[in-house]
Amino acid sequence: MREILGRRRRLRYRRKKGPVQLEAALTFAVEWQWPVLPGAGLKSAGGDRSEGRGRSRGERGCACPDPECVVPGAHPFDPGLLAATTDERMIRWWWTNRPTAPIMLATGGPARAGGSGDGRAPCAVSLPAVAASRALSVLDRMDMRLGPVVATPTRWSLLVAPYTLEQLGELLFVKDCVPSSLRFHGSGGYLVLPPSETGTGQVRWERAPLPGSSAPWLPDVEAVVDALVEASASSAPGSGLYPPESGEGSRLTY
Image (cartoon, rainbow, N blue to C red; front, side, top):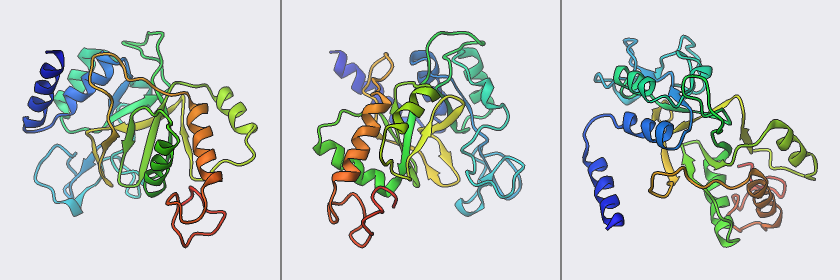
């Protein structure tokens, strides 16, 4: 019966019209204790924020003051990253005023409501979308257990358990080679979460968290990096991890 009710909740969620960011932000912040905040968002040619006022897809740019913003909409601006919180009242206020604002996760940050809390938010390892799609197929064949995976049109991010910069440094130091395309989102970083929309397109779950009220399970960063390095090093040309025409040294860099 619990599973049936869960399915009904998800169906109601899909039938809703209009922005759904508030419900998602409340799930992340209140149920999972992940500190979030609204991203800069998008604007139309007239300068309005991306609050659904009849803009066309070709008109959208970042609402921040930088006309050359390289990640339009997908970064904190006002408020800044340090404002990320798990406080329900703050979350409701933010997304009531900006209902379509992207949801930004403060990676590795403390799960603080009003500035306190002992838990920490997920970190992430990301790589280009094409390489990530191939890498996930290889990791599945290796029976690697993964947590949630966030996908944008340009990059996919594998969520991992919180780690410190010292832990990451020690992990990378002992590696003979680490794919140059990997990026690490740890303490002081951020990541855009579904169902946000940015200048590059829609943000979605490639591997969605399992339904339930508890926070999703997350693998250790060492396990994910080890598996990615192994997949990169052991894959022969034509394996699908990188384009057949790529050179021997281009694994996971495409």
